[in-house]
Amino acid sequence: MNIKKHVPNSITLLNLFCGCIALVFVSNQDFEIAFLFVALGIFFDFFDGFFARMFKVTGELGLQLDSLADMVTSGVVPGYVMYYLLLNSQHEICDCMFFPFLGFIITMGSCYRLAFFNIDTRQSESFIGLPTPANSLFMLSLPLVLKYSDSLFILELLTNQWVLLLITAFSAFILNAEIPLFSLKIKKFTLKDNWLQIAFITLSVLLVLFFQYAGVPLVIISYVLLSVLNNRFSLDGKTK
Image (cartoon, rainbow, N blue to C red; front, side):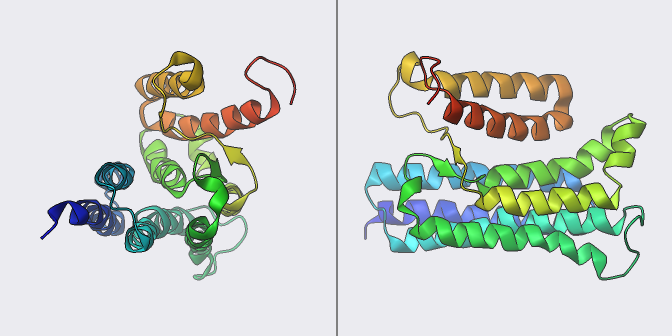
């Protein structure tokens, strides 16, 4: 029995397991633990592909399992979080009991992206549209920013139905937008080939250290902005 071929899929299933646990904690409004399990699930999501390539056991089963696991951890969970935020928002637009369910537009956008990712041959080296794990971390950080922020402006912003609906719509859009985003995978161990990744990781660490949970959405926004700038300018600073 070849144990190696089961290692990547087992790691993928751990991603799914973490997503299921995160759902339970979101339902209990324990967003800190939910955030940690989503982050752990994303960690497993990163390494299942790593071990699949290392053991040379990549296949269609692993590809489908990966998307199904991501659908829970990075699709259902962030949609559920937005449902909670809309449920507890100020009623500027609507106080209808069905309005909070619009948060699951994020889940539908994630589902479409994950399905399209499996058949899109352009995303082997980089991404087109925001990856679902990044979007999930962004959404999971919002209730924590709301909980721990002392800013009245942030409080009003993240309880405003218009703002939350805009975030929801933009999330579904950016997940599937035709915008190339750089990959964090390091294949050549040289500064010249990885300066953008190193700069982004350094910036991310500083943002999280200084702003804590509020640094997470700033990291995701920085990732998109750096990608757009990278698309606009070549490495030598000339316009493409």
